Structures are given as structure tokens and as C-alpha cells.
Length: 280
Image 1 (cartoon, one colour):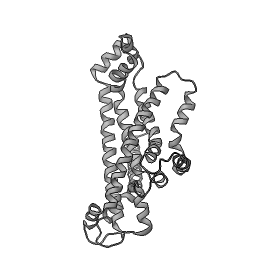
Image 2: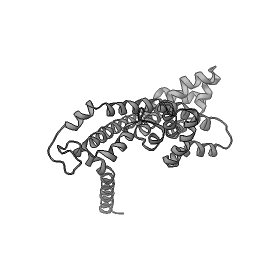
Image 3: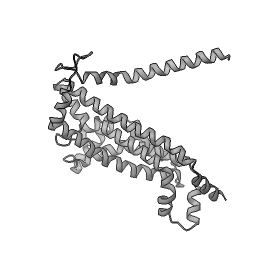
Image 4: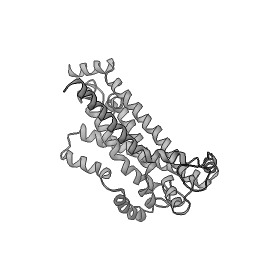
């Protein structure tokens, strides 16, 4: 391939990537200007500029309560997903368990199944246990969809480090708990953090499970948006969607930043020394 052909191929690929990115982002970007419209209904292009709908959000108890519920459900769900997902990744990657592929398929199944099926399956169970009157049922449901994300992230981090490092620590007298806290966890903490961010983001944006597992007192932002779409099609919905979009971007920026730190930590002199000691 000549230099000119390579240049044309790179230009064509860059155009394809730009068009694909625009196709994916355009629906979200259109919502942003609609949230600043002066009209009392959704319209594009917006007429005028106003912060009225954002001010209305701040003074509306229903929206404030839904935002608080999203955090009250999302944060515990992410913590549970981090604990169980990390334990599952350690068992599969470091434990000599049989039928590991079957275990992986079982763990990542919630990622593959439609969430409406999970919601239909979880609803009668939570109803029989009496967990639909508070937050606990929704927290468990949201942890179910977050666990596979943590598992994948931590498993990928574990594969970057040989188990000989942990073995060296135990040969030197460390028990399994101390080996995990002082050797394994520092190596995989970026994977744990990334999985936790993904689990929280999945919970924060989840609608289907929230429709089944929350009530009027515990409803989240996605559920309240869904209810408002049936009754009031105002720019308030666009304002909420814009705030959720901005918050999601912040989460993924934090995830990208943690991903950039991981290679630097993996190539640190201390870690290379530990690896040399372990192989020795």
C-alpha cells in the first residue's frame, strides 16, 4: 500500500469514527438545548433561553426526593456489587475451582438477560420476603446487574498480574487476608474502582428494575422521568436528562482517569522488584 493509499484509508476511518460518534451522541446532545427553552413544551430548535426549568427542579420536592433515592439505592448496590464481584473474580481467577467457565456464564448472565426478565423474576421473590416497602429490594436488584460489571473489571485486572506475587507474600509468612490486603488489592484496586463506577452508573440509569422494585416513596430519577413522560411533556424532563447526562460523563471521565493510572502503577519500579523477587 502506497503512502497516499494509507493516508486515504486513515482519513476514511477517521470520518467513519466521527460519524459513528455523532450518531451515538446526537440524541443526547439534542436534549441539552431543549432544556433551556422558554416554551412550556418540548421543542427543537428551542425558542429563547431560560433557566426556569432548572430552577423548578431545585424547588420541586418530588425531583429532589427521586435524586436522593437514586443515590440511596445506587451507592449501597455498587458496594454490594464490588464486594461480591471482587470475591467472584478472585475465586475464578485465583481459585482452583472446577467448571470455571460455567461459573463465569452464571455470574455474567444478568449482563446478557433483558432487564425486564430479571425484574419479573425478582418481583415475586421480593414481594414474598416483604422487601418492596423500603429500599432493600431495589438495592438487591440493582446489585444483581452491577455484579457482572465488577466481575469483568476485576478479572481483567487480575490477569495482568501473575499469582506468583501473592505466593511469594504467603511464603514470607503472610496469611491469605494479609496477602490480599497488602499485595493483591493494591494491584487490582483500579479494576475494583472501575467496576464500582460502572455498577453505580448502571444503577443510577436503571429503569426497568426501578419500575418493579420501587414505590412512590423510593422511586428513582429514571422512574419519575417515565411517570412524567406519561403526563407532562415539559422541558423539565429535558433538564433532568441533561443533568443525568452530565453526571454520567463525570463518572466515565473518572473511569477513564482510573484506567490511565493503572498502566503507570503496573510499570512502577516497586512492582517490578516484587515480580522479580516472586520469580526468584
